[in-house]
Length: 528
Image 1 (cartoon, one colour):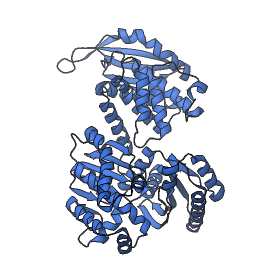
Image 2 (cartoon, helix red, strand yellow):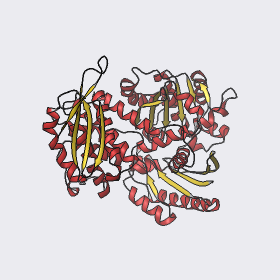
Image 3 (spheres, rainbow, N blue to C red):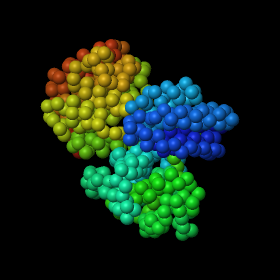
Image 4 (cartoon, rainbow, N blue to C red):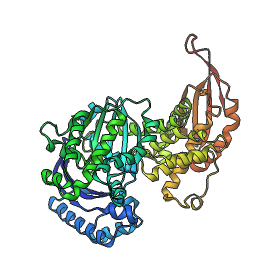
């Protein structure tokens, strides 16, 4: 079975559409059309998309739909990124597109956008796997911002967005009208301002060997400026020579030699200098430019979600790894978080027929468990409120803003009195379904938290099962459960209200050490 898929990327300075054929064997790009339009220039300067740009945007996308029809595409996705996301008239843009072209434009959060970029690199298979085995940074230089994602030993451990994209840089410097000799220094100063804190927070104990380049121009031009450069992989020394070649050419010469529009060449130098500073700050040795775009990630994501072909990399593990590193940054207890995660997921898995939630909600509960106490970094008395604010203010790659809001509320109402929908939804993106998801996950987290009230991990094994109108929590423990028994009822009431199930603890007492004494089970059980 072969699916034809169209991926439309409405970017800050260009609109692009790729047509893919997707089958069990993988993805094949069969067409790529692009149109240069600087949406970001209007939005970053004035906050809105002008009527003229709106009209041009709809006209171009109308032509894209005609191309899609010729290929008889089975499905499509149209995503807007930073420019559309930051526009004051985003809803109007979406409505105009729907009326004039029939396309539904979805607006990606930054975390979702970078996650798809990450998937586009992963679509390169073995080459991607090879690079991330060592310290590697994916550096995505866009029109509105720069995203840096750090990997080590095949795991994503940190990602950060910096609002210093190449269109923003150009607009900032346009008013200054610097001399060409000062231009590079000013760009470096702007980039260094953003990199200073990033270096202190993430690069102190990190050894980055590789940089994966995500850029619309560098990866294309590196192979053309000199015969000595490979199109996809070069050393940092070769890159510096490449930059020297750029310095020697005027924007007009670069455009002519490379066969690109002159307006594109004005963005090439800021992009090249951004990568120069990344190389110097990280002391990287190798650059790999896989030549992928957001559209490749869109197609890869579509194939993964529709199970068209098997995806070797586990992307959910990257989301969880990011959550664990956020917890670590805010001094969260690793042992308590891991114990709560295990308990909460055991309860969730035992109740599949009761709660009716899926794999994605399970992931949100897992992240809420890991981040439930991060607010202690700020305050011991308002932990849940501070945890809520930290989660809402921290991007977690791969999660939408709405999903992050669900997690933040689950953590908050793990302790606080649960509000009505009309109260909780004020100033929020959530709908009734999201409200029910929050209620269910918060109820499960409350019960899981109640089993470890003293944060001493008193039980070694938990088995959760639903029997009649009870959630039976059978656990093995040699420790006194008086504290948990006394405080458990306050956690039970909300759970009963949400699920119409009564949680019951059954303790199997174990005597002796599991290391040097044979474990003996008591004939009786404590039930409460």
